[in-house]
Image (cartoon, one colour):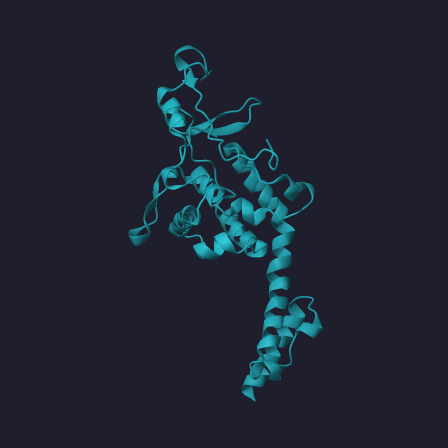
Length: 258
């Protein structure tokens, strides 16, 4: 009897807290007896009301923040997300983990983070920017998730689920947790200088991150960074600095903003 009374109180709170579909709320006895089907329907209803609606109401704001940062790496989000509110490409865009790494790198730089057993260095050489095999995808995601954990950001997935299961809602939940961590932070990268990756200005004055070298950056690109192509300079006289090349081998121009 006491258990049924507690369940009734809980159901009463559900009805009072949000507008719910009454047909999705089971009777106290169904919950008490563990009716799996009705419990699943209840959990889905609670998720839709308390998580999904709030999440999707903020989705475009969050994704605009992501693309404002990732555009500096020549990795803006797919056009359809903003033109048509179409989130169907969201999973495939973030599947490789490269864009998540860029976000982490942007607000921390190449430093060691975490403590004790969670210490890990933020190193672009541990990221394959254009992964082609499942092992490269998995290595990227495992590394990115280790960085998130070292930053005390909750990770809702394991690597295999992330790279194989296109669940837009849980992708958004993970993106929101990262957004909550960094949305009020400032870029930690220095001005581009010599072979050190950093911030410079694009052709229209927009900020660009240049000189970032991933595990699969072409050897020829690495050599050009080391030689510091002096024909492209930023500044005047002895204060002039070489403009480092942008690694854009990953771009698919037909689907993304320039």
